[in-house]
Image (cartoon, rainbow, N blue to C red; front, side, top):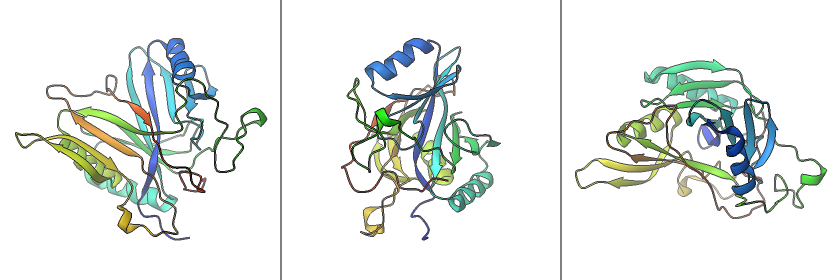
Length: 253
């Protein structure tokens, strides 16, 4: 088996805090159209209909709203080990290893300079559809249900930061992300930056499956720092073409 193009395969999931759990769950299932994989009482595990993992949004009861953590899946066990070593040597705040939840195995947790908690993991739980949710095509993860907006996948998030340059450096150092687009303000500061773990097209071969087109965007918000409990974000579905590959491609751990 050849080594992956990058150490990070894709955005796995986002944990979102809510102080109105029942209403939030109703919105994300009935209006936004996510599917409920499990509810353990404290958290609901949700996924878009063609997300291959057990969940891509974890909705957790909390006294306030915001982002709990952001999870990325590594491209291989070796890639996870390389990333952890790079993060530990970077000087950024680390929380060490944490047990996985219903959707994945052990994860290494760390923070960006603005208090957002990230985690990297390899072992994952693939969603297993029952008879009523089984798709017609083998390259789909579950049946299209046409409930609400019905996003196909959740593939990127948007974070606010006082200093986009600092956040960009964090993403490049810790996750090996590549800058795909950026906004340069008239005063010379970086006002926005879009990053992806995916290598340039020229670096890929025609026979190899792409690791991901999943991106993280950071937008400048002068005078306001996004704390873990108040970090604004948005998750949106991608519009990738249907192919023979079961996106994303890293094999289950």
